[in-house]
Length: 377
Image 1 (cartoon, rainbow, N blue to C red):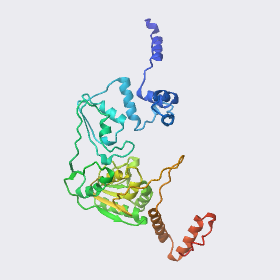
Image 2: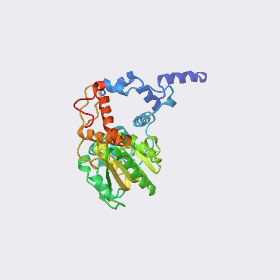
Image 3: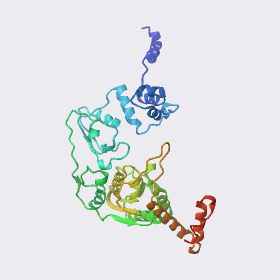
Image 4: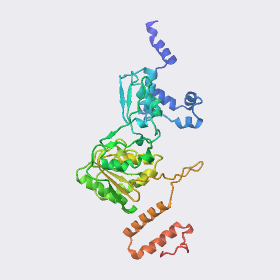
C-alpha cells in the first residue's frame, strides 16, 4: 500500500466497516423508525416500535440515558468490544425486580456461571414484579444447579415493626414465609387515627418528636398526601430533605413508597396506608416496603385501617381514554370531613350555612341552589 494513500484507504475502510460505539449505535437505532422496524422483525408490534422511537440529542455528548437504557448499552458494549472484566463469583442484592436485560448484564460478569442473587419477593414491585424466582433463574447461567434458600432470620427490622408488616404477607406475597426476628425495638408500632383534615399535621408532629429526639426520620407519603404534608412541614418551620430531588440525609426525609425501597431510618412515619395500597397494582407490597424501612420506631398516621388487607377495586379504563380514579362512599366521607375541617377553621359557625349554600350554588348546573338541598341542612 502506498504510504501516501493510507488516509484514503482508512477512509474507505471506515465507510465500509464503520467503527461503532455503544452510545452511538443505540442513539441511531432508537432515533430511526426504519432501523427499529428492521431490528424488531415480527417480535414487536407497530405500536411497540413507535413507543421505542425517540429523537436523539443533536450531539452524542448531550444524550441523556435512562436507567432502562443502561442494560442496552452494556449489551452493545459486549457485542462490539467483547467480554469485559469477569469474576469467579458474583453476588447481587435486590435482584427481585431486575429486568431480563439487567439479569443478562449480571450473568455475563460471571466467568464460571457461579452467582448468588439475593432479594425479597414481598418487595417485588414495578414493571418486573415477580411472584417466584423461576423467571429470574430463566435468565441466569445453568452451569451449576440452582438452589433457593429462604432467609430464616431477620435482624434489621425490629420485632414490633415486622409483626405489623408481616400481616400483609398473605395478601402481598402468599409464597413468602415470615422470618424470625432476632431483636426487639424500643417501642410498639404507634397507630394514630385522625380525621382527614388533621392527617398531615399529625404526621408532621410525630416526625418532629422523633427528630427532636435525635433520630433519622423518614416520612413515607403517598402522592395524594404529598402537598398537605409539605405544607404542614413548612407551617411548622421544619427543614426536610426530599428523595425525589436526591437530598436524602437531613433529619427529616420525605419519600414516596416507591422511593423507600432499600432505605432505612431510625424512625419511620407511614402516612395513610390505604392510599398506598390503592395507588398501585402491587400496593400491598409497597406498603410492606414502607413498614419495613425502620430500624427502631414505626408510626402509622391514618384515617382508616392502618394495615388494610382488602384489595382496592380498580375499574377498567374506558377504551381510548385514561381511567378515572375510583370514588367510593368512603372517599366521599373523607372529602366531606376534610371540607368540614376547612370550614371550621375559615369561618365562624354563624356563617357555615351561608357558605354551604354558596358551595351548592357553585357546584350545581346553572349555579342555582337545589330545592331538594336547603341551605341549612
